[in-house]
Figure 1 (tube, each protein chain N blue to C red):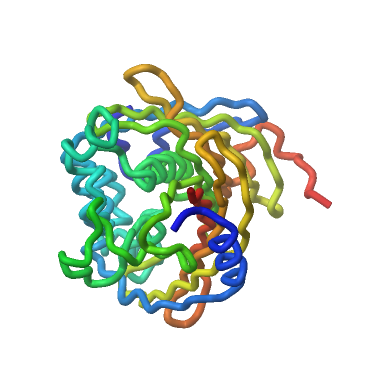
Figure 2 (cartoon, each protein chain N blue to C red):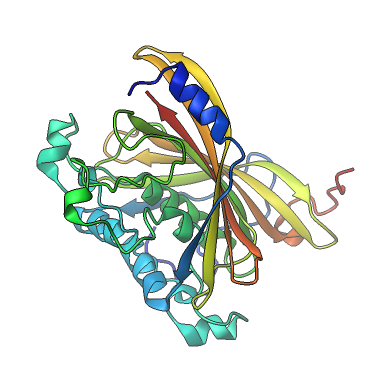
Length: 161
Length: 167
């Protein structure tokens, strides 16, 4: 769960089959991280940096941006795919808020495998992002990632009609 | 203004209307700062030589970078910011700047081609779907907006469909 070595597979990839659970990754947040994310995305909403405002809105602290949740999911997928894979699609829905300081744990389970050609396949992952503080699900998502077909347990997968 | 038949009708007349904006040139430093903010050390995002060795013209943006930027304008003057700190231009054509509570209902992104520093991007935004839903807090409108990000040559790079809940 530490920072990934460049160019090396950080998470185990093969052999993939339906139901394969990928190793989770943890992303720690902080008020500084959340502020820098607001700055990098020109997000001026006070809910992300003004604690008094967040308290008045009924939250215990400033909130992690929905796009930052998306960034963690995208990073999880991109790190897993590495240079041999490619993130094609990512969908997400924020179910519960997360506050700055929360550690968010992203995990993925293979829910579909499709052949894309002679040597490529698409892996669909069902993603969850969990608050480490109470193990409640903050975000659910789905990703579709193009990978070498050699990553699949059954490389004889038929081309879809 | 509340969520009512008039707002629903106004939104329905907005369906399919495409709004094209020039977002400007994507700089290497904007990409590197985004990656630094997330804490992502991938050299594709910050090291030009590394990105070039992987076949890109310059550093590559993390997948959801362009969809995550809230506002591409130079910024509104302070007197035009709302109480919550946001700009009145909410990037939701048809939704009034005041009086409607907007909640995120999810996002679906499709990544066609990498966004690379030096590209000049345009964004085409269109409302695609509008529907009504009743909730415990009263009537709600569900709207789905599509954003298409293209490079200067018109190649489609990223698509994002945002679902927003209005009440």
